[in-house]
Length: 421
Image (cartoon, rainbow, N blue to C red; front, top):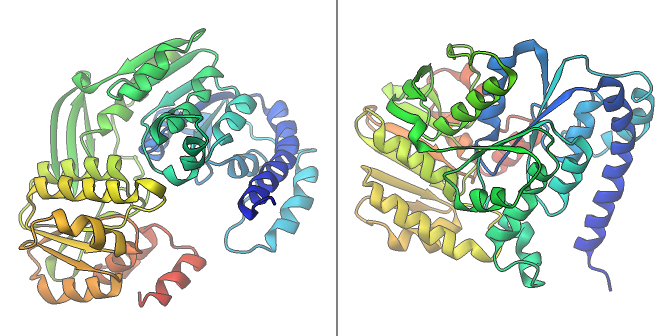
């Protein structure tokens, strides 16, 4: 008997091919120079940096990095957001829009996520980018690749994930710039032929200072300043940006005052009673946690507290990843650790310094603890799932800042309300 999961997978591919047919008509009419941005983490930051560089010469796939989302983006349509009934409209509208709609910018800067097997291959073979910028690789959605490992197709989840990402450089025609700090990416790129390859590494970063509300750094001899706390690893995105500028034969933009930090990626907010809040709640897995922990260690501020939620979608690696998370946090030696979720409680807490650590199953309980125990002198950094953005919301000094937090669509607000947030 065919499992429900396999039926859904087959149906997914059938329906997405339907939308691809009509999006391809618009794409052929448009004929953009495609710049693909990919990786497990950091690709949205790079996408937004590219927007500063290229401005209105490009169309950007904001909030669309899947096979469905990119097809809708090419057709100039909003995808499904909270209403399953919208599928009927999308199915009917796609053929009509394909007859006349097209974007007109020279470039298409498209963010591509290797979330599930076959999806990156599907997108790479369709879009065939001129340039690919590969930021990172890691276990962001490891659960989707467990089956490939179980079938003996790959020796590990990491190999399965990097194989999926590798389809983008394979289908790229001119330039692949990539993060050479990753052994997985570097070994993969050594096997790619027929395209110019440029690796970037940590040697590009020569100066770095970070505060709760700003960052200064020098990459490749070029000085940059952000009005947000940025991890030192942003040198990767800046170095990739520089390689693209070189390829296009234009100077790299160094004035980043117009950079728009995506929600939930280390955004600074002023909190009640003088609290300083750093919101990095968009996602959580070891790569991004390592980056944000390193940022926090370097940050020039006092009384550092960190609030960590579960790492989700890890499949069989769940216990191992959360144990490693605990070891990473313990070595950082912050003033206080607040863990939220059953996974951090079960696997992370036992390896922590219990004198500095508290653990809660529900975010509402963690919020009540923070409201009772903080004095106003602390900096609170939030990282991960378990609706931590709901905790941040209740600690904000300015209620208007709620709109700048991640997951503000009605369905997400409804889910947080059920959790008491």
